[in-house]
Image (tube, rainbow, N blue to C red; front, side, top):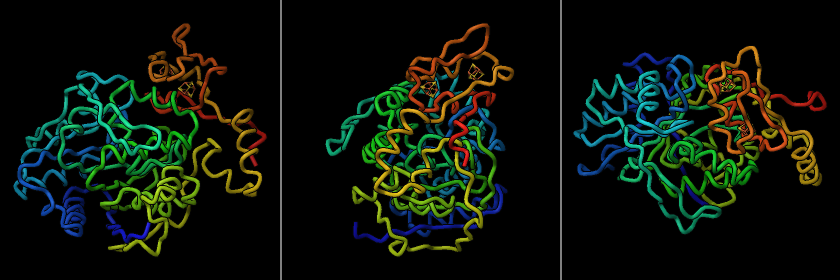
Length: 382
Ligand code: SF4
Ligand code: SF4
């Protein structure tokens, strides 16, 4: 698509609140965002609250970014602000409370008198132009919002390769309906096409990405901390994710949400068409990729052979989740989130029935004690 996009970058070395507030203000000013919202509009802030983790565990959007956005909105006179997400697992008020408390959302919303969503209703939202999905169940606060601000966390991701602005929207689908989408779209590329359909349905107005402390390796929950000291933003989520590929040091053609948004003409797919505002001190070393080979392996295979090689990999050599029994506490969260219903709890330990596994890694993502590894055969350790 022939468009120019603005990507705003600040070098934000840590989560010290005053610094984050100043940098978030800079981002919003660069897009004249506060003048684009009408006084009567309902504003929705959608952070990444994947699971019950503390901010320093670098899994969820840091509360200082969410707080900074709230303060900027309130200073500009907006009062109809809601913070909402549907994390992994069950979607109930009790579980939401635990996650909001742990991730720091309860405290900032209380402090600034902002609504923190506890309703667990959802409604179908249509998008007839969807390529694979023309209607999604969407959580009520997102459905009702007039202006949506996506605040994502930059992470590598075992299934989609990267979790950025577009992937963060998966949390607009309620609770255990999410695994159903893994079941419907076990193929990574189709799953990512579905995510693009979802993004086209939700249509956020703006996205910020928390890459101050990002995650590399086995994200979105089992990886290592990677300090990049950056906050990034744009009003085009696809172009923002395209740029994030250069932050994590991965070929955009290996991240299907990016590759296919380029194909659909939603992403410019050309660094020359990005107007970078701010200083971009990109990391010197690429992020560690997830253990799963699907992300960058194909780049090593000649184009001609990619299809048959991919099919063979899918059939015989796909990485798989492996339970570390000594660490498993038998909580059942993996079984709950497994779309193939192929995990059972025996003697207080999880057991995976591999014949039905679709390699979505929802179990790995949801294990609260990181007792699930992603393992690949030694054949691919080259
Ligand atoms: S593997 Fe993790 S999520 Fe599954 S039962 Fe054990 S501790 Fe719970
Ligand atoms: S066992 Fe894990 S990876 Fe396999 S289908 Fe279930 S949740 Fe997905």
